[in-house]
Structures are given as C-alpha cells and as structure tokens.
Image (spheres, protein in one colour):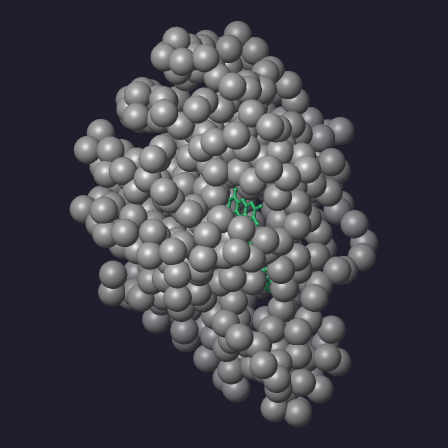
Length: 416
Ligand SMILES: Cc1cc2nc3c(=O)[nH]c(=O)nc-3n(C[C@H](O)[C@H](O)[C@H](O)COP(=O)(O)OP(=O)(O)OC[C@H]3O[C@@H](n4cnc5c(N)ncnc54)[C@H](O)[C@@H]3O)c2cc1C
C-alpha cells in the first residue's frame, strides 16, 4: 500500500480508494487514477473489556457484527451488512441505534492510514489530533485508511423487522408515524419508505405487486418488557389503521437488525438525492406523497424518511477526545430517494422527480447533508459549516500538499 502510493505520486497519478463500490454514484470520475481497492487481512479484533473493535479496511459490517455478538456487544452499523466499515463510518453513518448512540463516526477511537507521502500513520486523540479530527466526517481525501478502532455498545433487548402496507394507506400511516416519532424514546430508530420493487428473485410477490409503504428499524432497551412497550406504541396504531401485507417485526438478537431494511447485497447503479429536513408536518408529508405516493407515477424505487433526533442532535460525550469534524446532525428526518436508470425509469425522469421532491421539501430543508447518505455527486452537499470546512482544508493541505487524494474529497458548500 505504501509503495503503491509512493509510486503513484512519483508518476503524477492521483490515487482513489474504495472498498465495496457501494458509493460509486457519489464518486467523481477517476480517469488515469490508481484505484486502490482495500481488502486487508487480519480480521476483526474485539477487545471485550474495552468494548472496542479494531477493523481492517475492506471489512464489511456483517463481519464486525458477527465478531462482536459473542461478547454481547453491538456495532453502530447501518442498514446493510454488505456496506464497507471505513466508508460508512468516516462519512457519518446513520444506524438504527443512532438515536441512542449518535452518528456512528462519533464512536471512532483511532484511525490508521497511509498518507500521500507513503507514511503509515496512527491518528487518535493523542497522536495528530488535528488529522484525527478531520478524518472523522471531514469528507475524505486525507489518505488510504488501513484500519479503524470503533467503540461498541450493549443492547440487551432488541426488536427489529419491517412491515409493509399497500401504498394507498401511506397518507394515514405516515401521519401516525410522524406523531409517534415526535416523542419516541431514544432506543427507537426507524425509517419509512415508499417502495416500488421489481418482480425479481428474493422479492416477495406481495411487495412487487404495487407500491408499498415499508416501516423498518430497531427498538432496543434494557429488557424485553420495556422494548415491547415501545414497539406496541409504534406498531399498534399503524396495525390498527390497516393490515400489513407482510410484518416481520419480532423480538430477536441485535444481529438481526442487519436484515431489517431489505437492502440489495451488491452495489446498484442508483441515481438519487438526499436532504436533512426539519419536521415537515402533515403538510410536508402530503406534498411528498403527491410526488412519490400511489398514483404519482414516481420512478423512484425507494423514497425514504429516516428518523433522526435524540442523540443524533446532541454534541457527543467523548471524554478525552474532541468530537470530530462531523459529530451531530440537527434535523428531524433524513430524506433519500433513488431510482435505478433503465429499471425503475429513464435517468432523466428519476432526476426530474428528485428535483421536484427537493423543491417541494425546500421549506423544511436544513441545507445540511450526511456524507454517507449522499446519493449523487452532483447534489449540493453541506456536512460542515464554513469554519469546519476551512479547518479540514488546512489539514488536507498539510498531509496531501500535492492533491494526490483530491479526487476523493466530498465537496462541501459550507455556506449553505
Ligand atoms: C445497501 C446500502 C445500505 C446503506 N445503508 C446505510 C445506512 O443505513 N446508513 C448510512 O449512513 N449509510 C448507508 N449507506 C451508505 C453507505 O454508508 C455509503 O455508501 C458508504 O460510503 C459506503 O462505503 P463503502 O466503503 O461500502 O463504499 P465504497 O464505494 O467502496 O467507498 C466509498 C468511499 O469511502 C471512502 N473510503 C472507503 N474505504 C476507504 C479507505 N480504506 N480509506 C479511505 N477512504 C475510504 C472513499 O472516499 C470511497 O469513495 C448504505 C449504502 C448501501 C449501498
């Protein structure tokens, strides 16, 4: 790895890095670049006493979950076990435990990386704290990460799953979900999505027969009774409104949260958009459903609101270390919508629908984004304020003065 970076730099070639390619739609073209695809050995090492895992680059979340589970520990993974740990973590990371534990990036304790000079560095609160600060949510372009240390946590009782209703019930269901979300306990993190699933292997026929509204996520807590109470408050009113087509919500182990969201395992060439929203109220939900609900003719395969608030909005308590460049999001919901050109509609129709949704939701747009949720490199991005963006740029100028990793930087419109 170090030799590869040194020789690319000597040849004047930019270096790009990815693990799974899941975020390729957000990547700038890499013509002429050396592409490093990380798949480092050594495996996930869990230190149960410290509650920390050391994860080599290239590892996917499922391996961390499997290594942590025997110790009763849980990782701040996202909705898919096939997403790469490094790309997700350092770009923010919205997990179904996030309203209790915050953005996943706040749980990074140390980062090992090869910088543009070919040096292998260790960055943490005591070693180059400024680089460590920039690595955590700064938008990349600082080097090739070779390993991360991430703090795990406990979730003794967990209920997770997904329920799906015909999309004609979406107006009533979304209103009820929004009312519940306004005062939901932190142990609950959910998402709703209007889905138009193709008739494909692995997709239950009742879900591909027409547009559906899905509700998935996780509720965790100290014991099963406490979790069951929260789940009853969430699902009871929705099940009363209409019978689900399919309902997999059940008390289970924390590892099952990986399978709740029905994500594709392999990278898909999606085209989409993302916003962080204030509470759009029932009016905003209606405007959204006009564009993505039943009868809208939407070409989006998924049109989703992820529940935020709780610890996502708090400055993290990280004794002994300064929080990173991105450490909280002050928003009620993360909007993301995406289609697959050629499968769910022509690219132009998907782009046009995303633009119309963006315009309809503009009154509630915070102007901020979470890098791991950005779906399209052309969309406006705003994960940092102007002061933080300038501070990250100064770190980049120090560790990569020649711009070897410049193509890996997630652009930020800091004045949004
Ligand atoms: C099915 C699916 C479900 C998802 N669910 C969630 C979710 O619940 N919450 C959430 O927040 N996000 C979610 N995401 C988004 C995901 O977190 C981002 O796409 C993330 O960037 C993917 O990381 P990757 O390493 O797998 O992708 P890649 O495309 O391989 O990498 C993405 C970028 O990460 C950086 N990177 C990766 N590895 C390294 C490294 N070793 N050194 C330096 N930089 C590196 C690079 O800039 C690279 O371009 C999901 C994505 C998919 C496809």
